[in-house]
Length: 408
Image (cartoon, rainbow, N blue to C red; front, side, top):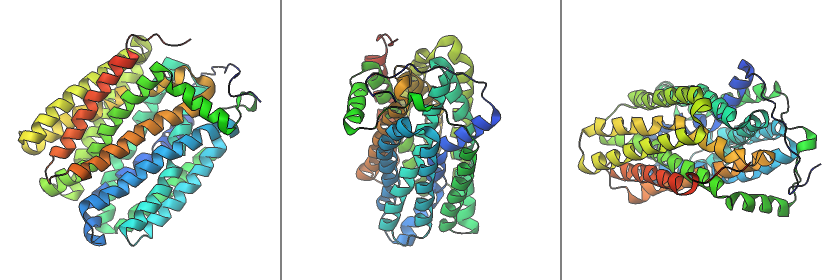
């Protein structure tokens, strides 16, 4: 057993990414997307069913994001101590319990509690899937592999709102959560077929002091902080879009719930295309250059979105077009920010992955809640938060990542 302060060097295994590995890890990373995106078409209906304002229903998304953010801080160190596979399995069990609880909820308050439980379990999937990738691959190869995973898992947010809309029409909103539980069962079966990627001799201790020291070491690293904040601000914009568009598209512009999924799917298609480009170019251009390009384009799209949201220029398409370019940059920003953040701390890949994810979803929870706080019944609140998030992501990249040499 190695200590938290004197880790043994990890071997870079770099096996060929087989279909089974890609599919299972993609499913683990998609747990959060499935739990979030599938119930988006039901959010306006839930406000009526529960007899509460729309802002109260948006808090069910915020409670999920809080659980998804804070839960990662536990799963990362647990994965570094006990291995990835067993901790993922435990997380999925929490996810299943939360999904069932949501399906049986009768009030918005009950759903907020169970969404939190569902999120605490769901976040184990992406945290430890990213750590497994870092166990197996070096920095640029890890970025390429993460792009492949994001490309495959892009099917989930593409299909989930479409499926959720159909389930809402043909069954009920409760059926959406039972289908989410079924996805969790399938993911658990896939995990059972994988081998453990973190061998016992490379695991670290789980003393509270060691955990706090590890997190402090990460926070004080300038490049790590830059990757985490830049990716976090960008992701805050993505979640502001997720929380805001059901009301902007369906309520404000009258888009049918079933067609909302098509507009949502357009953005996912753009993201998948960008992921494909990133997986092909990252080994040639490097993670940092593509990361800068992604944050630059998202900032420009965010500024255009703010202008359109404030003036009403272009109507519905004045929102759809800049949002498409912003969300598409997920393919360049997320994989490269994660790979860059984890590259300097391979012996703490679980802990580093957890902190990156926690920063992302803490900012995302804040942004989705902020929409409810500043909403004036128009798309302006969403446009403002998405645009500001894109600009802050670019500034964090330029100030903390660019010009700072990577650690050996």
